[in-house]
Amino acid sequence: GDSVTQMEGPVTLSEEAFLTINCTYTATGYPSLFWYVQYPGEGLQLLLKATKADDKGSNKGFEATYRKETTSFHLEKGSVQVSDSAVYFCALDSNYQLIWGAGTKLIIKP
Amino acid sequence: DTAVSQTPKYLVTQMGNDKSIKCEQNLGHDTMYWYKQDSKKFLKIMFSYNNKELIINETVPNRFSPKSPDKAHLNLHINSLELGDSAVYFCASSPGTGKFNEQFFGPGTRLTVL
Image (cartoon, rainbow over all chains, first blue to last red; front, top):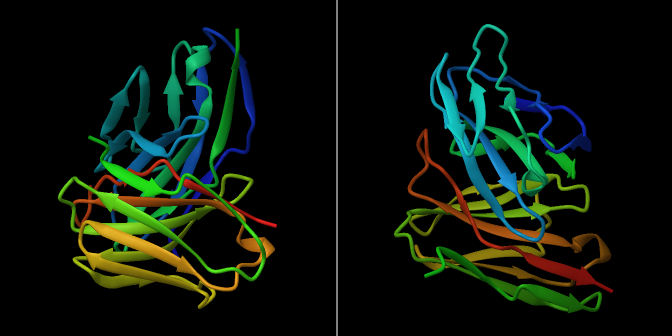
């Protein structure tokens, strides 16, 4: 079945560092791909999405490009802030639901 | 003007009790979901309703029973609570079940079974 694999956390970075969180997927067909973010004590919220190959989703300085050839959707940000500390989830849509990665906890130190 | 709301936010109860969690969305969405998130943040879908009809019913103990009185509400009733039911339960909604549909999450209900 369809699946999503994310890099294990926690990922710990200093403020203003470059961020990459890896996400790869296995799917039949051409799913849409999503990154959701969960801040401490809150529900998940959509960060960005891409609906077809080579699309780039972006929001709040974060970017991810839908790479069909490598079945990847890595999340990047050029300069992270303490306020970016959260858990990040990669997901794809499949059969009326989202298939979720395990989540990657990001810790940004000042 | 909360989009997806859940009550209660915290629920502490004894093993063997029965409890309910309520969810309401004011977004006009057709589809609603219940998720369970464990202590390692792993997210597992439990149920999904589309226009009050059950469309996803994952492998979940039959002690868990969802109920959708209308498409704006999806409640979760849990019988005979067990220690392993302790988790955060999230309700979510989306415009429909097709591709590109963003899911909107509630703030979660933290259930602790003692």
